[in-house]
Length: 112
Length: 113
Image 1 (cartoon, rainbow over the protein chains, first blue to last red):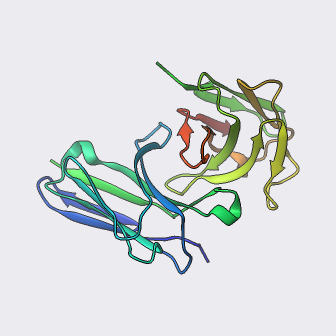
Image 2 (cartoon, rainbow over the protein chains, first blue to last red):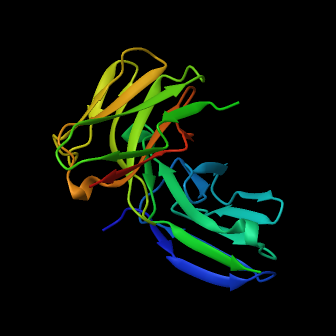
């Protein structure tokens, strides 16, 4: 059983559609990060959320950290083909030396 | 501007033939990690160095070893690669204050023939 469950695992949508990716856990995290990974490249950090209830916006991407710091969501508005990639959430726990635990990932394909 | 550099990008080896993957960083970060990532899956942590202290994950096979001769460089040695070891190998670093944010290299895609 994964500590961080991401859903959906796969998502294929048309350009212009909206989507939400979820990252859920029964554990509390001191922070949660979202990464995007393009084929053949390493993951790139998009955002870090730290405070329960925090909302961060990055252009068309909106990230939310749950009040209890156990879950997070990523919402993309008007998706574009350039958003295609593997989205990974990762949680840090202070009692684990801030080592990151990755979710299983969501593979997003945005068709033109 | 590359900050975490992995070489080579693609590596082909034969079954059972030792192979070494390399990683260097210009961030002066104290923590370096090696992850294994199989197709469309999340990266799986193999081990990490906190400065010179080596930390092995419990389920990392003995076939995988690592060396960190200095702050900037870290190597992943696969002593006897099997077909199941074909994967993308990602190096990452993190630094103070909290060592939470990972900076990844572009990875080395390893094929085992």
